[in-house]
Image 1 (cartoon, helix red, strand yellow):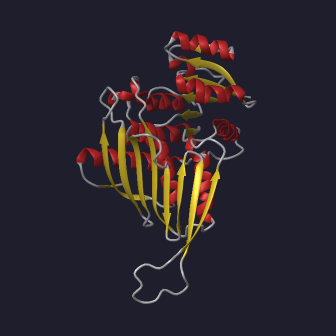
Image 2: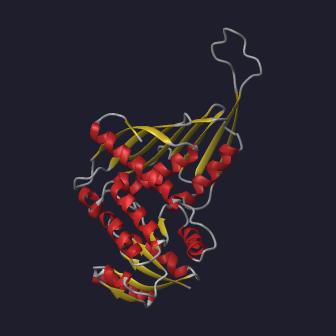
Image 3: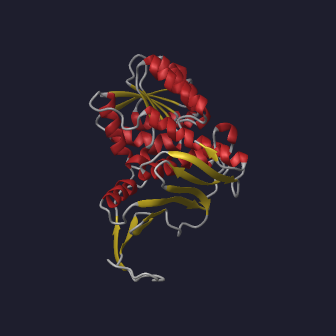
Length: 335
């Protein structure tokens, strides 16, 4: 059994991490830390575990194999560095750091401790990303030259996520999902970013809309956005030189184009043959947390390296930082 100490037992701590830990035969919840008494009482009810208010009491214990950090974003790096310094393996929810200084501090702390530091990016296990990779690899749409990744809502919130001082805003909240997936699918690295952010419907002072155009080193163009809109607009549009993939939710449509073998000189627009296929993929587009925790168990027990390398997670943070810098400066920036 992998003994777990969980810091932060709010909505995500309960639904995303707590449930997966509870269901897994590989983990045992030993202690939950939260400043809210109702959350601590809930943890006792669910896990029959110990609780504490100060996270320093949790990381000082010698009976923990893994510390999971699910607190507001501005607390992640400090808590992770402290837990690493205490010799603990650490899983930290996204965004693992709200700026590059925090990211570099955590990486330095990991190198000094020699323990595990695992950024939480469950969308890498998303059923959409997995299936889209397969379709692209099949050659159904030829060579990809443009990827659009979008998420939309009219949902409003009024919690710590609306304040920039807490590391709130939808760039850091949704960017680790949307930007990471699109970049992975492109097969390249971002070299230039032009972006726009805006506060539209939420209170507070953090953005609830972001739009970014990224140029990759392999020539692929990526647009990523979280926007205030109804959800009828596709979540994915992937364009290749021989077709297009459109995905909304779990539904995928693939149009594969066949050109004539010979196109006479002077032809204005040749006739093409279009083959359309549709399918619905099962699973969660933001990853199955049970599957992710099975992988984490294998990593903590030394069976396999963690799927997300720290340098790779750092590059993602660099892209999010570049999006923020571009929006603030009102011009494109290099990554």
